Amino acid sequence: MNTDLPISQIIERVGYDNQANFNRQFKAYRELTPTAYREAMQRG
Picture 1 (spheres, rainbow, N blue to C red):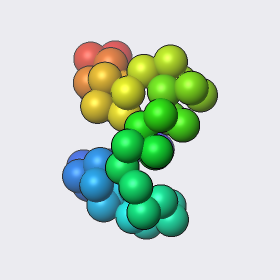
Picture 2: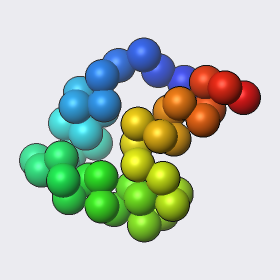
Picture 3: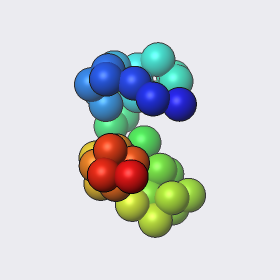
């Protein structure tokens, strides 16, 4: 999936009400923060 939505909007759309909790869960799954993951995907 590729999106230019702000991470805060993605968090809201997937049903999280706490950004810190989302970041923690995302990092546990991908081993990167959402921002770092997005940057890595943009670099290719």
